[in-house]
Length: 335
Ligand code: OKP
Ligand code: ZN
Image (cartoon, rainbow, N blue to C red; front, side, top):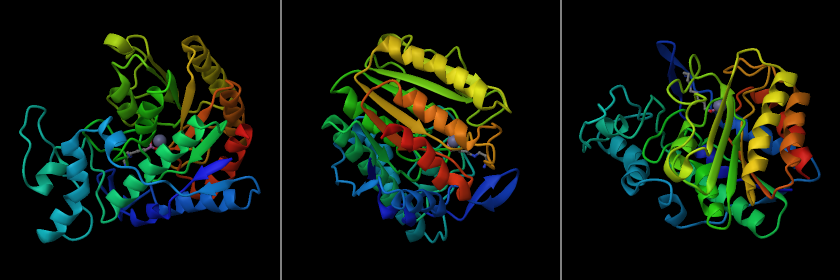
């Protein structure tokens, strides 16, 4: 299987996140992608490919130009103004507030939580978007499946806001590119709701968005992901959210995924994009689900069973020592 990976992810290494009223070490760390890369390198079947550089065209089909400009230069402006370390928001723009000029004000305008911008954030996110686009091109050219080992993740990033460790929405950029070549289904199996992806395609009639996730009534991202969010306009009926209870195990999850995949079959897409998170795993430090390694394998087989050309995009998963095994088990189903 083609695996698209860029070492540029290592340039993105924020030191802290704001959590439970204080600073804690950043969970979305470089060791995550390195663990997956190392496991796949030893697999004998992963065929590593460098991302091809793309211009901003495919990004601009998803994100606002002023948001991309902000991401590109924010850390530079922060440092030039005397800031040190990561740039993070402590104040957020009121919904009707103006677009400010200062970088500290802008991160509270271009974000919905305290996700920081580190020195190498833009380079890493840009390389991850290139990885997802390269993998999409491989699938469009006839590969049955391709895996973009993206880091940072992307599914919380909206058209114009960062959040939840995400800056550019790689799955959305690739899905919009594929959707120009035929109807596209996105299945998001990260533990958290993919609010950015949902927002981007909410009125899009060419893209089905189906997400299984922890109930937003008590879990991040907290304000989106309810079952009654179903799309609007051309996209009416093309958003399908399945909030799940804490503690759900392999059998409960498989049943929910089976129902979600029936929705995909009814839509009849030409392409499948999987937003893949391993934070559903029983030992994940952020999650509350109880999926085993075998449960992740079952999810892989169920998704492969759709029989569609498939782009797999890495999102979350924070049990660093298990990520390699989880990726091997899940991806094995697609080759
Ligand atoms: C990203 B992905 C406070 C708790 C909220 C944000 C979780 C982002 C998950 N630190 N943290 O969907 O795996
Ligand atoms: Zn997640």
